[in-house]
Amino acid sequence: SSDVCSSDLNMENKKAFGHALAIFTIFIWGTTFISTKILLQAFQPVEILFFRFVMGFILLWIMNPHRLPFKSWKQELTFAAAGLTGMTLYYLMENIALTYSQASNVGVIVSIAPVFTAITARIFLKEEGKLRPAFFMGCVIALIGISLISFSGTTMHLNPIGELLSVGGAIIWSFYSVLSKKIGSFGYSVVQATRRTFFYGILFMIPALFIFDFKWNLTRFATPAYLFNIFYLGLGASAICFVTWNMAVRILGAIKTSVYIYLAPVVTAVTSVIILHEKITFLSGLGILLVLGGLLLSEQKKKFFSIRGRKQTENVIE
Image (cartoon, rainbow, N blue to C red):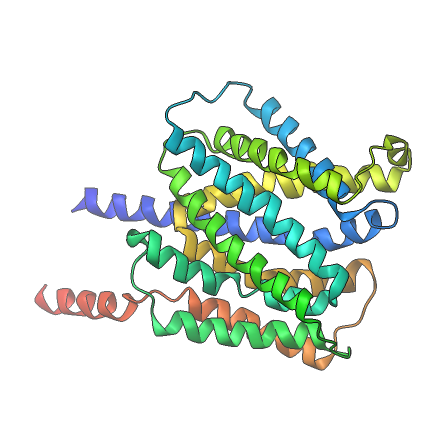
């Protein structure tokens, strides 16, 4: 009995660690809009994307310089697909969408990624379990909250191209989440596996460099603000955060981890107040509460009441 309790405790601690990793990752990702906004003054979106992932790849190599062995073409194709979806296509689609639509529109639409992740994981990852009504109720509440945060005090303008690209980005991210869960089953170091994924992501970016007129012009980094922010994106938001996110996916699963994406607009709103001195309106404040409530509902444990009932029965028997 004591062994079972110890095992349950260790599992709970492991899950708590997974939730902490997901929250940490989303906190960093939710603040990257400031760095991107500053860099866009001198860099094209594809240039920011390429520089940050190259820097991330270098850091991951320093963190674990051991080469990841080749096992099979099936595994390599999985790594390649993860790099293509999570690094190249997702960020390109999101950045291009921002050139057509308002950031608020793109932010709301991309935030539906957890819904697509739940569907994709249910199809390809049977171990992710059955989807519950509470999950979808939480999704709806969180998305209403995100909409209030994003559109508070703004006039909404729709552009079909931007909206379609945003939806495409959300769908692409759902496939990356499933692929990262699959990669976790290979048994490799998270840093090594993430580095291999980065390698393919950078490889697939190369054609986009020619399409979008990429320029090296490294003298731009002589400006301290640009240098600091590309380091923040490359080392923090890319290398470290993809490692912590992938660790969270290994522990919690693709569906539970993806739900934390709802928090990104909340982090963005709070950061705007602290750094950019923007004001939180009544609607955005209400939106933050709805996002947090939706997140808690989506993460609700379905066995809570059954466990509680079983414990009460055990107490009566004793």
